[in-house]
Length: 310
Ligand code: ATP
Image (cartoon, rainbow, N blue to C red; front, top):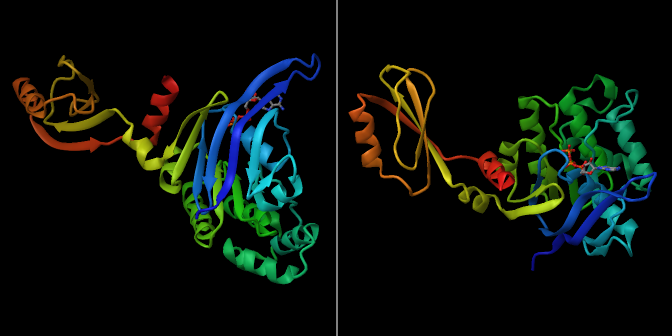
């Protein structure tokens, strides 16, 4: 049977106003979810949704107000040390000592965890995140992407079964982002359960098997990425047309026309709500000659906006 890597039940966090000791903000409200062993699980939400609070509770740096948290079979209230040992946390900010080499840094980290065979662990982990060639360079000389990978390596030193990444690609350029995700996928392949937050919905769409969306402290969606994508109600078609007068006015029931230029019109409509024959003859009637058609099936961004709007 598949093991549950993380289970959270009715988790809430209320930050108190430090002076008045009165409730200030409900950062998380009754969150209930499970992450299965071997998953790549995405936690998504707009700014201030409560993602960092959620991860900080797992990391032990923020204390929950109520609810249950179980990590790798350990209850956070009863076995906080085992919980910490089961998770590797990759923080949002890059906080590396500029004068340590990756090797030195990982050796020190291994020392902190009382790992005996330091040399070997360090070597293996540097290979895992493709930093073996940079093992002895100063951290300050590493590129942004390499620094992020070094943070992953640091979080993996004690070989936790679960790796938590908080916005690992913020501020990393496209090429390095891809590279970073490749490394994360490799770690997942060797059995590490991954929990991540990201602002880039396209990345979540590509990486995650399941996604939880939180908004203002509430869990508003929890499903497989596939099912979430199926929820998109609006579809879009882009027509490339022979040049036409942009001042044309078009209207049809259940369809929204957007004139993009004197050659392109985008048509959005609710799934199963239009008759294509009608649409095509309508365009013809308006002397619009179709040169090309492309369909935009929508992505996680649409689901996200749809959910948050409601
Ligand atoms: P972002 O994507 O911007 O990092 P987030 O989803 O991680 O946002 P959190 O940082 O968890 O959101 O914040 C959730 C809410 O709790 C926000 O309204 C934030 O202002 C508030 N908050 C976070 N930390 C504290 C704190 N230490 N004291 C009081 N309020 C806090």
